[in-house]
Image 1 (tube, rainbow, N blue to C red):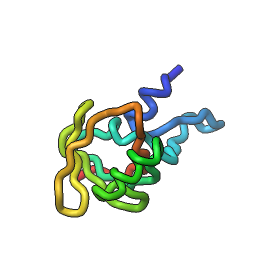
Image 2 (cartoon, rainbow, N blue to C red; image 1 turned 180 degrees about the vertical axis):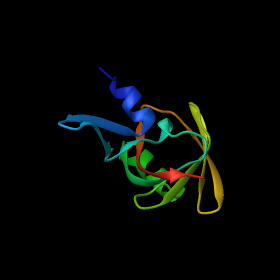
Image 3 (cartoon, rainbow, N blue to C red; image 1 turned 180 degrees about the horizontal axis):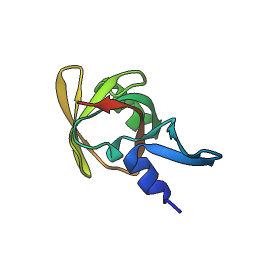
Image 4 (cartoon, one colour; image 1 turned 60 degrees about the horizontal axis):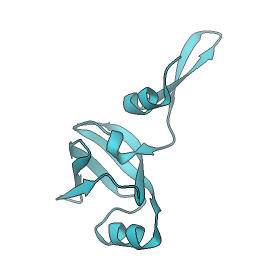
Length: 102
């Protein structure tokens, strides 16, 4: 059985049907799981209100296109022609919908 983490890393989930495995796009996944060059759209920012508000001020808000420049626990993303460094934290989570690769 495929683990949930692997499913998120691949960006797809699979369901068994009569014809075999069928690819289904995930609704959303954590920003930190994007790979270098992956393009996505921010689905939602969740967490403590102060942290969410600060991230929204920096441009991380629902509907905004984001590209992973450098993955990792401290990642660099491109948002609206600027780069932003985001540290992995327990206080918030940025969920995205995968759009494709560049």
